[in-house]
Amino acid sequence: MASADVQPYIVGGHPATVSTPWMASLQYTAPDYGIAEARHTCGGALVFRDWVATNAHCVTDPPEEAEKTSSSLHFRNGGLPIPTKAKRFSVRIGSHDRTQGGETAVVKRIVVNPGWDWNSPGGHKCKVALPQPDEPVTCDMAMVQLDHVVNLQPIQLAPRAAKPGDRVELFGWGDDTPDPTPTIPTQLQQLSTRVIPPSRCADAGQSAGETCTGNPNGTDGPGAGDSGGPAVKYVGGVPQLVGGASRAGSPYPGAAPTVYTSSPYFRGFIYDTARGLPMGA
Image (cartoon, rainbow, N blue to C red; front, side, top):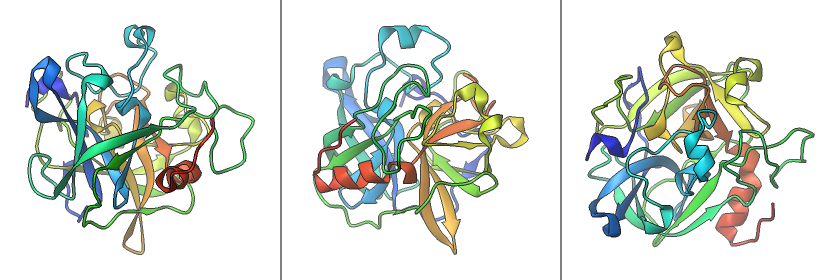
């Protein structure tokens, strides 16, 4: 796979050492653009046996102005400017190797949170499971439905949002160095860090419905290739999904805290989507 397809990174991480049957690699082909071999574009988490949770910016096209401005800090999927409608999405789930193993499925439906907007972080309200706060909510949340039920164990959705000080594990595929021309590893990367308070995440515009994770050593953290990848909290040894990678406070991989869409905050959207219920903005 060409290095331009996915930009960095979980910098400072290491090959995943825990079982992750719920970990998903969202991939695509684009025959009209000469891409016949599936390319990894984002991470995701199996939340039901035929539904994967990921982030909305992974499966939507940014407006032209968002592509041009440096203030738009959502992790880019990198590579050629291929429109979403030209992509044929699939997932590989349950393997630490994004090129083989686990189970694969075709994505038959994509449901983007109806409140999602590519405008500045924190600039849009959306319907969520909890009462609307006074402040805006960024809705970088999407669900992809698989063409069949997979024989893998979904991850539990955490009952409540992660709190500052909680230890979490971040997972994703991408280069493990801040090199601007990365070599993309095939093995799933893992990084241990902690949730930090919003006051330390101001540069990334953290809003309600989001969780911010620290960057150990001031250098380590996710980047573009890790978009949609899960933040996981272990409770009594049981993994619980607390977030999906959305954006960073710096365009340089690993150089700033990372904003994760809070999965528990969007519990209503996740469950209603899987049940086939309408979800209004």
